Image (cartoon, rainbow, N blue to C red):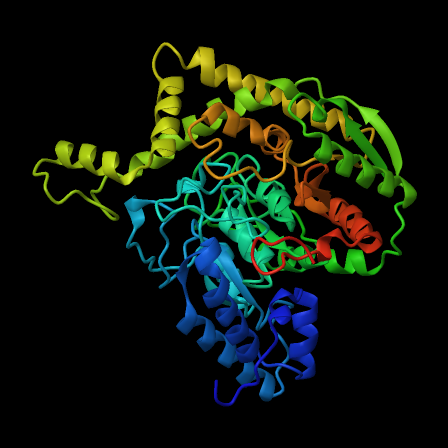
Length: 503
């Protein structure tokens, strides 16, 4: 473009810290960074389909605004000021289409920002666009979107995970320095694992859910996808904190996470790491197990103390989740009836006929499946046997974690039992698909924070290490992740082209 310098492709893989240094030093403008990312998007997104709605005009406007402020000598609004990024298409964004991957909201343009998009905008982050996801965040492969599936940048014939697969794929493909996703049963950590990026699920209540289109209100949480743990700390400093618009957000002080990491020497001396025996069960691929065990040995070499622990209620977590989450989805999605906004069947004349036709066409098969499961679990005669019992088991799961965190500082294990699987392999086998979340759903039921970081490869595909800690202790899991990434280089690996391996 006239008046700007061209930037090499590799620059779109820069971290937030690297972008901040360039911007502050005047070695690059935000407009240059933004145009480079938009060019990258135009080049590679047709192959992976990570973006549902591009925001080119809005991104360039925000970038030019940063450059004007910088030229005038103003300090950056935050570490994210002028940095290009993306948002999952379930986060309400003023003036930018928000579809939730569904025909129900194919042309919905919100009149306001949710709390997290508003905080990012106030911090100066540059929104490149919205990322693809499983419809209403229901899925583990990003194959359930009404706009088509997203491919994994490491192998476009395989899934990127879900439901935040578009966000994970965007970071893995260099389409923004970071992205925001949501995690209801692993939807940040699982795609982070399959795409080889860092994905953090904060404590339930740490980040406001106002403006997040709800799937399961007692489980949903917003969190970042980044290239490394330090960048995740920078994003958390902006998005975390209480919010009067969300009654479940907690008034707990938000640490300066990056300062906690700045003071670390890379040692994990004195950190007690628990290894739950339940995280090594049937279905765990040998290559995944080997990579994760080697990562655990690396933690020991960094000085961590390893302890075998048990979470006895874990085997019941998946069944518990797939009662509670669909029940809450059944309630939350009742609002999509074609009466106030979104899609409405134009041929039907009565309200009942219109509602039936609208919901039949507007929802895809996975959403319908979960609505029916949830409605059944909440129905008269079955509520006590299913939903109430599931809530009781949830209490036992939370109690297990509370007790084990009296003994250790963090828990570690595989994020997923497998690497990215081929598209279409599990889309018609919902139980097999649900099993991909076996190691992630317990953290959502307990409300604790967790992060997935790259720790190796199997079958030339990324493997993720999951690190969990007690409520509101994101600082400790970031410390462990940061120390591990300081001693290894798995998080620096990038796909060659798209889907052609690592470099």
